Image 1: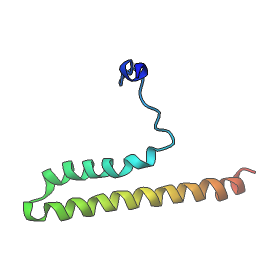
Image 2: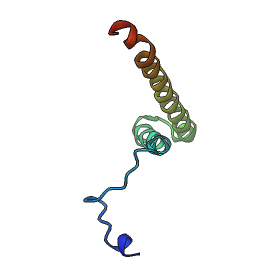
Image 3: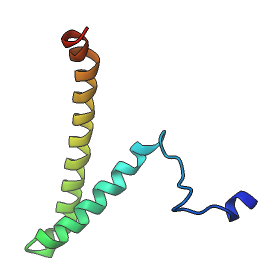
Image 4: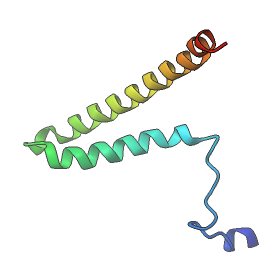
Length: 81
């Protein structure tokens, strides 16, 4: 209990190194909400466009992760043995 009282969020941040991927969804949703709030001409389409952009961001990040993994694991050893 005493450790919880002494926690200073900006001076002693939580270690999220092993669970960083769980923050991808809320981050993508927040970016989509802010971007589409400015760019959507008609608010009838707002929710659908926000969900679509959120899915696009998440899919793009996963594909970038797969591509960088394949590059590092298979192509870098061929280039610099």
